Image (cartoon, rainbow, N blue to C red):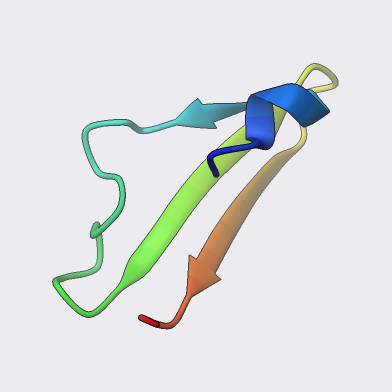
Length: 45
């Protein structure tokens, strides 16, 4: 998520990042200039 803009992606849903699914859920949403959206989900380290 931190490097997304450098690779042509912009972050979406800032108000819900990073714990939209609860305290044990880490996710970020991205969109590129072509309109493709991606959800990035990770386990807590």
